[in-house]
Image (cartoon, rainbow, N blue to C red):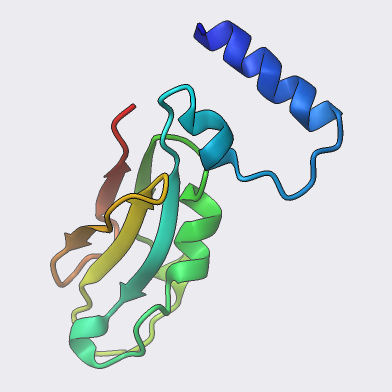
Length: 119
């Protein structure tokens, strides 16, 4: 099935009021594997609780596409440990597959990390 037909099917399913649809399963039949955030931490190297940035990156990247360029921004995330150069790490899956990890070294603020799932 071509992409145009796939998006038409997705639109019909959405209009039909399909609540609680697992889009990875629906789109997986078309070879599309969506990003699912497992955990994200800003400052793990500084002793902050793991997962402190999960909800923020999940809003930006989960199920959004097969690629997400996420810019680390201390103003959006908050500074969980002032005075410590914080690294950033995100663990994610592509359509429920193996967990992948992307990270940025300390002084990660303003760095962009790319999460990507192969089609």
